[in-house]
Structure formats: structure tokens, C-alpha cells
Amino acid sequence: MTEHHIGLIVPSSNLTMETELPRMLRARELADPDGTGDRFVFHSSRMRMKHVTPEELARMNAQTSRAAAELADARPAVVATACLVAIMAQGPGFHCTAEAEITAALQAEGHDAPVVSSAGALIDGVNALGARRVAIVTPYMKPLTEKVVAYLEDAGVEVVDALSLEVPDNLAVARLDPEDLTEHWRRLDVSRADAIVLSACVQMPSLAAIPRVERESGLPVLSAATATAYRVLQSLGLPPVVPDAGALLAG
Image (cartoon, rainbow, N blue to C red; front, side, top):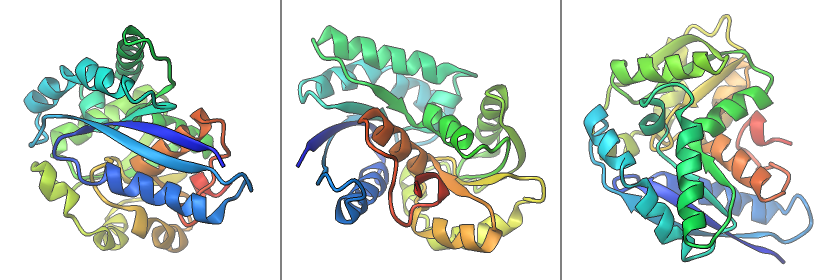
């Protein structure tokens, strides 16, 4: 059995990253697709943020090096940073800057580990599905959703439609019922979409809804959380396979 230690950098008000990602990897443990008995352990460092506004997101980003340095003490095998919109709101390509900052902070503490951002992971996940056009659901106010759309399009992913649920309070986002997403996606025009991003936010729960929306839409469905799990597993050198988590993690 191999025990993999995973470091998480999360907003202080995030309730979902530390539930959906462990839930996926626990399901993988139980399925044991590799026959290797891999086990996953999680360690978190938090950055203060309560409301999803440009000002609070910028203040949260300023805490990144401190959070990464704290995680370095646990010597994780991989570090994943969670807040997608905090990165995408800074402008196209910023996930590369954020990942480099975390890498440098880890190295300053004498530790090397691969770094995954949910922002970069979502782009990687869309590409891994071979999708070029997506429809997305976000919990953000429309101006922030527009920044997410611009970010994805700069990365070569056309966003054919976007639905903003307009929930500014981050705790309220975590309390959204994922069952509602089985209806929300129907408000999207998916006629030209290759895939659906059911939650372009690791704070908005969606895991339970992904298999159903995939069946009903006939399209591959992913989320910021499933894409992050995909990249975490790749970074650990493991097949990115998780049961009941959508096409991206179906192997």
C-alpha cells in the first residue's frame, strides 16, 4: 500500500474542496482500479476570503506564499490550490504565475512537489476530453463569469453559453443543492457544445449531479473539482480513474 499526502490551499470559507476531492479519491480507494492499494491523506492551509468579489480575491491571492510555506512542513506529494475564480480574475494565463509562486514558496522551505491549480486543471480537463466548445455553469456574479469565459477562450476553449447563478457569499455557494444543477444545465444552449462544465468553481457542489447530467445531456460533463482530481492523480503518477465522477475520470 502507498500513502499519498495531498496538500490543499483553500479559501477560508471553502467547504467543498475538502469534501468532494476526498470523496472522489476515497471512491477510488474502494474500487482500487490499479490493484495497488493506494491511500490518500489530505492536509489544508487556508487563506481568508468570505465574499467572491475582485477585492477579496486579490487580498486572498496575496496570502498564497504563506499558505504554501505552511503546507511545505507536511511534505505533501502534490499541492492543489482551489479557488478557480481568484486565479482567472487576474487575467489570462495567470494559473502559470500562481503555480510558479507556490512552487517557489515550497522550494524556499526545502520541498519540491508538483503544483496543481483548479484553473489550470479545468483547461487541462477540457483538453483531455478533446472538447473545443463548452457550456458552463458558475455561481459567480456575471462580471466574474465574464472573466472566466475570457480566460477559457484565451486558452483556446470556446464558451458557447454560460449561466451565472449570482451568489456572492462564498458560504452560500457551498450550500447550493447539487440536485438543482440537474435542472440548471437545461437553461444552457448546448447545441454546439462538446462538453458541459457543470461547476466552474470548486466551492459549488456538483459531484452528485455529474452522472445524471451526463446521461441526460448525452455530453461529457466535468467540473473544476473533477478536473482537479484528474490532475492530482496524474501528478502522483496514477491513472486518473474515479468511479461515478464523469467521463474525464472514467479511464
